[in-house]
Image 1 (cartoon, helix red, strand yellow):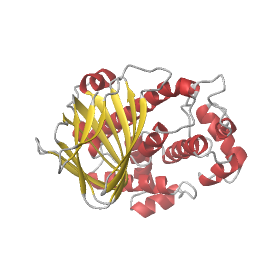
Image 2 (cartoon, helix red, strand yellow; image 1 turned 45 degrees about the vertical axis):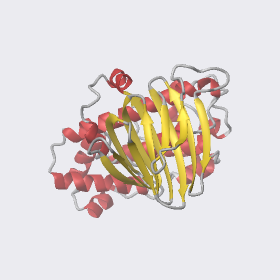
Image 3 (cartoon, one colour; image 1 turned 180 degrees about the vertical axis):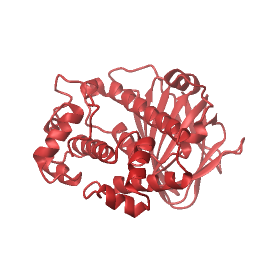
Image 4 (cartoon, one colour; image 1 turned 135 degrees about the horizontal axis):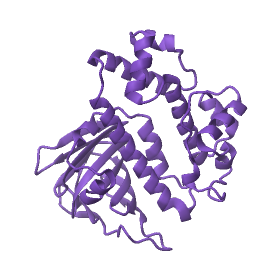
Length: 332
């Protein structure tokens, strides 16, 4: 998958990548980092190339409005995630265009010749490009089906936890490629299952909106969660409808969902920020570190201290042994 970035005003070449998707050797040429600068912007790009997939983490500090042309040599499926600031993109050949702010994303398929990305100020975004054939192989679906549904999904903070893990430096290099591929699968599963759930709701739209609001409240209050009654009152729906509807939309109970969010956030903090087990327990809402340790082990089948001390890669248990138990509601 070859990629070029051009200056929109001058058409001058800023960056070019010819990373080979199937090549991995001791030089780690499947991971690259580039820092670019001009009188008007500073731009850094970390790039990961896997089979049929190219991932990039982009940071820009633009002193004035800057526009880049993104070109690839294939038709692709593109996922764009705005992590900070604002960005706008548009196709000069089609009517595709969108503006994204922090924690917003968009997903679409097109030919990326003459595809323009605009920045004004500081911004960070992650892009994940799939070759059409590879996307179809992974999902078993026509690449053009339901992609527009993906852009309307509210997936924060689940998607941010996955994205944060993509560029973690704490995974042993020997298993890093497998780890990254697993994260890409997690991301696709999240989008596809949520899109399918949205298509089968039996509730009125007003009730769906209230339950989605309740979901956001749960996500933003993991340290001091509301009771079911408090949550239902905050969103203006009775607790029976909330319980039933929450299960239908998320596939989990309210407290089961809270447990999942807590554990995913805890895994991220332990593996990426090297915080102590006690500190992480507090940050995800556990007053007792022993209760947190039991909950974490129930979810991942390892003790949180293994991640905290950087021992995950040295243990005999690989990433794929972090099995998730089906009953996640009993330890909170």
